Image 1: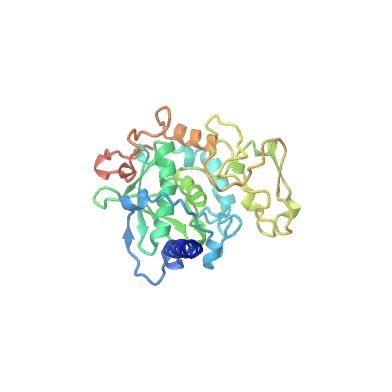
Image 2: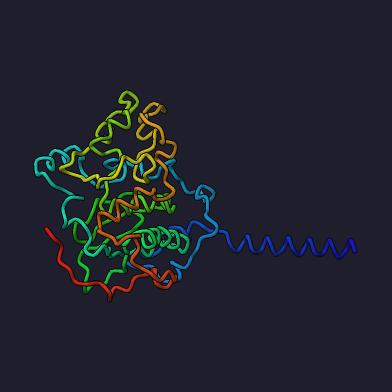
Length: 319
């Protein structure tokens, strides 16, 4: 009996070890820069990947910042030459970005291509992030058809995590390097492309947070610009500490001390990069005039998560 039990334990451990070994992700299954790069798209298998096991990228030797969206670009991850110049120019214009209809994606459908250098694990994580939009909003990411789509997102592992705000035209870069392959981080970058700035850029932010300027690293003051209502719309939604678009309390700190201090309660999740807040979802649905409940995809089968581009209605951007 003891020998039978020992055999059972040995077999069980062997099976567990084999299953664990088979599930281990390698760096190349995240990003493989040795692979020839071309424009690809996700497939049904990527969207069907439930990713029950999320990997800590640190264990693969991948450097991941506490907040990967705080990089070396304008406001950390917005691809602008100068946020201050942008604000000044667009305050004079009296309209920009989220307020300009032609910067919104027609029909809420966002064509994209994807770098072939992403491995199977990264493809599944990116698909999961896109599916957050598919299930909670009417915004859909569609595989680019070159005969139909001049404007599209080019998602590739460039240098850190960054995006442009709204539809800018042509081949529009979104960078997700290996340290960005987390669902919340990708949701954040895609929300820029959908048409949103950071939450603390709101005109009314001074009623909700204090910027501790003496703790901000040298040369980073312009990372805390706020935009007036000529530039962005609040969409009649309250200030949202829990937004996936809000800086964390130590953003751009040069001293290790807090740079943002909330003035009101409810800030416990400030800077989270896990999932949409309820307000995030409402804002997206308002911006794109989504039907009540958000998603227009009534069939939740995974095969429908990759939207058929043949369903796209030709629609010229509105100015």
